Image (cartoon, rainbow over all chains, first blue to last red; front, side, top):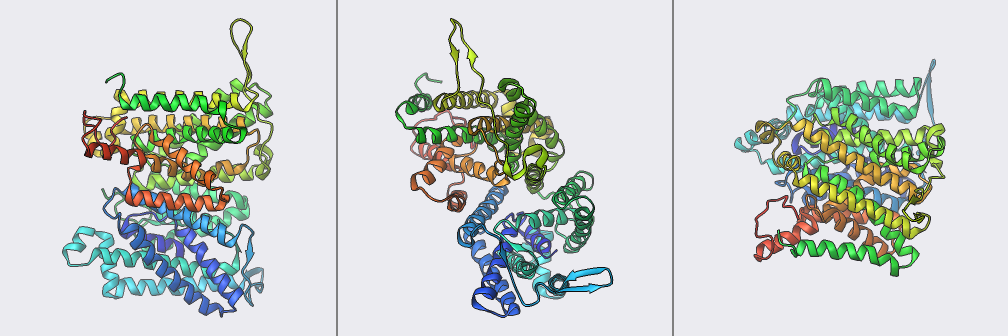
Length: 272
Length: 331
């Protein structure tokens, strides 16, 4: 869900589906892993550090890659995002190796049992962290001037420009916030899963499906979409098979695109 | 057009080189040339869709995989000879392109890209997970080489050596490039170009954009399937990483580096992008990294690619191509 909202912010403002988002999340998970496992950093400190690191990475990437070609045809932006994905995946394979890694923190094997329900503690932390971050994000967007500028830019670029909003600065900020969200998501989920350089792809596709299902450019839609799809995905992996749950999720996305292209809570679909 | 235009001379020289080189090169270099030819077929097919029709698809690894697995499954499990299996696999990948194209092409911009990416991911998952059928992670072995073609006077064309396999692939590359060239120069090719420039405008001129895009997509998928079938036949073993979506991205990288929307672009790009890593002898993981960096540099500084850059260079100096062709000027 965090991944989905990060994507929504970048997508809404820049109109670029950031294919590299899942890989940024993978990079964050590895960053957290190395901080905690190799340098014995406190997990929470690592969470904060990785989030900042990813934000800075986002800033660098934005100014190196997306800023110079902001006026190019949008297809070029897609290709640039794809190139970024290749760089991150290749770099991760080279630096981190192909073998999967366990991100061990003191409570990573602890399981909480409530009656018939058993849950990894870390998954509870993920849920709690997501709720906290989503609330912070909501406050940021709805209650601060900067957030209002962000929303205005997403709704109507030229209009925002006319109102004196520095659109290019807002775009950079949106990218940074989006990547920082990937950073939080990566470190949060890290201890609950196995780390591998391609771990970002599945969540990326689910996140894209979620924002399309929920409605593009709407953060509430992304949250709703991610919630519903999350439920569907776990039901599908429980009752059908884990490998085919991705197909179910994607099927939902395609059906949504065909019959209600603006999603559940979306605005207009296509901006020329 | 003049008979000895620089473009024609260039193509003829390239073809002569492509035919003569394997005669002097060793096994290893010939096998690399063969791979270049296979990936060029795929880049040419992607070029028809992206370069000329303006639709960016990240899903062509799916058609490559479908072509390869269709050939393998039909030939290995049904014990049918190479040729029926080859034509069937081409038809199957074309059909897959047609079926996925109907919903996907209704969408534009990022949505289309996402659906193609999702399709590629789904095919990748199916290939990996459907172990009974596709062999799962172990892959599928025992692909047939093409059966000999009987020639008059008792001779026959056999395909059991590496060199003959190379010429077989080269034949298809030339054939497919020629088909694409004809197609792009025909009326329907002009409508493709119109769609790539401005889809709304093309539609307002009475072009059935959906139909034209679907044609382009289906043909492109079909040719990717040919590339897959050729790869399967050459490599004898196919594994799921053939259908992994990153393959589609690599080929797209070749296409953009070479120059999308030009005839030579995909071939030049594939050659360069294969020759550089091979020449430097780098590990495969680093290859993805370097491909990504090269692609990024090109998309920022020279989005028209190598051939596009050349063309702009010649324009500026007032040399060849006096007839004034546009962005998608056809070489």
